[in-house]
Length: 329
Image 1 (cartoon, rainbow, N blue to C red):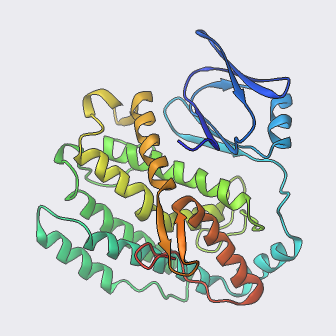
Image 2 (image 1 turned 180 degrees about the vertical axis):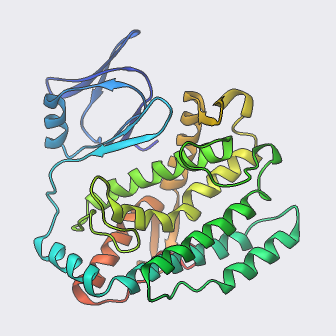
């Protein structure tokens, strides 16, 4: 995993000691140098205090909290040192006056990445691909009403989940997408992977001048970074789902060893989350040839560039086209 990101999977207490971090568990004390850390993932029950949070803020470290079951709890990041008043005003104005073109661009990006993904895969039943592509082609992201557009987005994902069942080991097959709580191993991986990507998007957009509470596709709301939801939707087909399919089909993750099920509730065990995170981080740090910049760019950087692209649209009126992996920008 990149040195800028540190994961803590054990139960324990995290504290500041002089100019470094210490993590204490029943097994002993571990020292974590603060230098180079940009993100901290607390993947279990970890106690900390305001002294530590102040120290992390001084060093610009974003902290993401997940609970014992692997569910995302929230994020803490330092004060918005990058935030621009001018951009915030423009972002709010564009939400009021120009929301639909931006929201439609995100849904178009989801659709295009979905089509590209379908074309790249082998299916047990070729008719599944044929039907999925026909359904996708009929879907029109250019709507004049946000509720209708969100309905179109929902149709896209429903179509995708039907196809996903034909791509993975039948033992993992899901009858439907169940989020809260996930009820089978495939849904557990989807929920964890999507939450992880959302947190990564928060970290990347923190480095831009955008206000993450002002979104265009999802409704802005208290208590969540809805712009990160907008942007992470486009990257699910590029980062999260390819990793899930690969891990299942290459037997890198085991139903018997890496999942726990309780009544209608299924979650990844700690070892399963560790394996999943390693593969997600590998994908995130992998590179592609960016067709505008004419150089290799990681998918992690591509998320941040999506924020810059949106900023230029808001401030300079430059066209905004959501990220498409096959197009390379």
